[in-house]
Length: 261
Image (cartoon, rainbow, N blue to C red; front, side, top):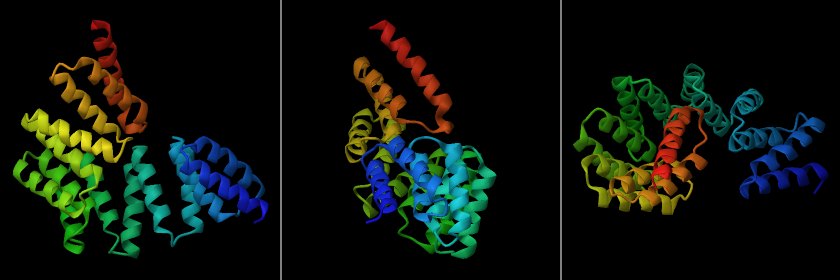
């Protein structure tokens, strides 16, 4: 194994071990010497995302996509980063480009739906998800997203049906348990909401929004100390620029609750 391959392997290992900054450092050094190393470029984009350097990762991933136009994973990564940065138009272009090349890439269709959803264009969001499910009825991503859309529209029975179908398709998917937790919480069933939320966290200990919901559930049950711990975990884990306002609100809530103990 030559020196470049050793560096690439070390960067990959660092990323897998939860040390994205170390991976970024290794890859930055490698690419300064080997700027045309495409494997390193692709991994660099991924490492930057994991390290929270979204602006730089967008530039790196755009470069990688231009050099590796057949790599759908890179295109999804780029679209997702644009979306995280609030660059919805750029994200849409990426997802549309994926679909133009392959209509079976239904995750791109669902991602377009989520852009509509966050911009409160519910009919368009629902149409995208239903179109994805027509093409791929067993798409868990599409079923979860359709459930979220129905829930936001107040069509709770339809939402619950979607969430249950998604869990039947993939029982160990933490998102499915979280969706049910959110549903039960809104319905006032705190015990079932707590159970589902804890199951989501068991399956994915870094599921930031599950901690936020669990914090609210605990607070409603007057378990203040546990709610503070959950909120602090949310603040620690959730790094998306889209969540900045929520983090600020939760931080203020934690400060207020802590002062009352």
